[in-house]
Length: 440
Image (cartoon, rainbow, N blue to C red; front, side, top):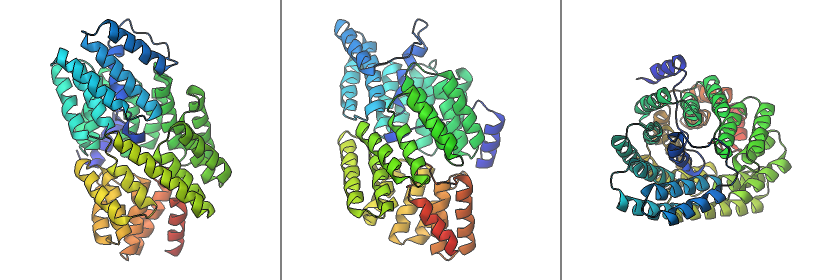
């Protein structure tokens, strides 16, 4: 289907869904984690309060029943939930060991393949993850979550039409929180923001046995509100903190809102808290951007150094961070040659619209404006729906002397995201875009 046709399809088929592989690419693990529970009529829906306690229980059950492959899978799934909560990518190695032992007991187990797919996605090995997801589906076509896993890989590989069909199959079979989150993302990608908000509301209402999963949906809703209504965004982020106290993505959201209001002190507080709890590069990078905005180059440099260390730690855990690191460097105009190399490598293995956008911006930083525009057009192949893509397209057009096109793209970017708070933006981009529009 063409992008316009897909958008019309999504608007008339309100149950369509899509995946979100968000912070550090670690969200897909929860999909498999819920497989066994959603197919078990005796499973409790009581919210879990302590993932660490569940891990201890899982270890005890494995020790008591080492000949049962499902014990290894269940423990690995709990580790994946823990990665969502603390970004400890070393847990993937524990999963490798557990799943290797499980495979030794059962070489044709669909849950093993699906959990291996989640680990692969967490490492950003999307082609491997998609192959394993399809294998799981072939071994057992009944669990609806497998369709979500297949769609996850298709989205990351830029196979948007195929992903829509996979997610449609999933939501037709069983609409639930993970399904509605996917609904929201696909609607957002195709420009249906009202539909995305509605889907996230449904996800929050559907709930989950893991409070963190609900808080994630609330944060995603807050991000959509932040495009036009800072007060509503702030309330939604605080609701997420009530659901899951000290949740770093919600703290980050509050930090972005504070920065948009010009409250640097509050922004520093929230970004610092987020990084102390969950040491991801994106939180400390934002903190560095606040200091850059304040003119404190020394403190900004210190935060950017910590961001690099966070990337290094993630990479040491086997995660492919080419896309994220290229974006980090390009946004701050650091080491443009390395950024371009990383962006090219990322697009080769992850050819979606956001990787194309990262490639366009890396070319821009090196002064390769013709190549930048070609990549930018690839990033807009689904339509002009992403504010960050339009911002980059406008800046590139300006450098090529295409003033009317530049003006059009930049104005449309502001129309889609008034405060430039979309997660792909640096918080400093809004001021740059405003100055460019004034000059034009």
